[in-house]
Length: 394
Image (cartoon, rainbow, N blue to C red; front, side, top):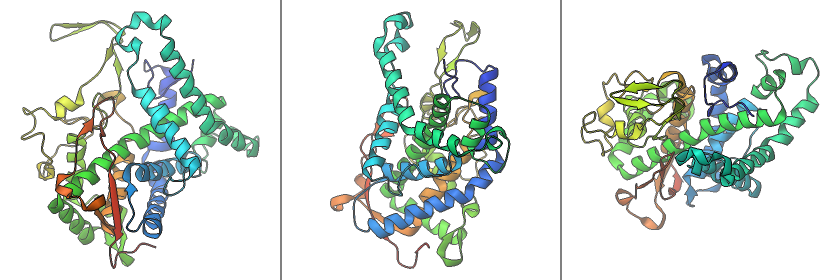
């Protein structure tokens, strides 16, 4: 049985060890700081790809953003890109399909035993689904992991805490088998790309639909976060209060994981006269909390100003706002996610003007969602970029 970081049934010693490795290698302040240059470089590649190849052409924003976030994370994990800048090559589309459709969709869909646990022994569909996911994970990572091991010296492979090494070196140093490393890399990759991609797509859709909000965000970025040569200063983006409010409001209105990560009752307990049996799977309906009119005025509307001069944040202390869950199982990568979303969206709106295909009215953009274990936009967001004059990167 393989240990899991995200979907572990309990917070045992193995889970704590894996979380510690992930925290130190990916989510610690030092790791985030060292990855900042990688993120800036990959976003610059995205901007140049759009400028050189997509001027006036239709772009699938989800695919573009997913490829960018994936390359940022895989350069931290394995020191290499997984996709081309636009994620449009045949091999890119195959791997992207595996991650999005085969792994993410299958792993996050409800199976028969989720509803009827007593049928676990005869649920061959779920077992077949798990085997498909396992084969796809090996398809993506096996050659990469084996190649790294063949290049590593004996000394290199046994120094797990060397700060010059990437996450793959660290995992190899701990002696994990190839398939276990592949599972861990996949869990961390999906955790770092799925929610950030979903949030970025929703934020871009809301900005395109609300022209005045887009102009206000763009002007704030130009006034506060531009350095020499029209380049964005990532550290100054956090000072763009209205832009930050737009990100918070997107996470409230379009929470990426409406039920958060599943929790398990380790002991039988009673809450408000309800008995929760031991080993029950507990889902927290974050969507209902963040759309509750008792917590939020006019909750179905996109109103970034509700977060201006507000002390509410996403660190789990305000239970009316839990886009990253709360408690010991809350998302450890929220700082990485927020930095990624702000840099990608700021670059897209600063360097390009955007329009809908066929001259469609942006104010009529369809914002219906596809409800599930993740809350994606129902219809893909297709946009046409035009580079803005006097705003050229690199």
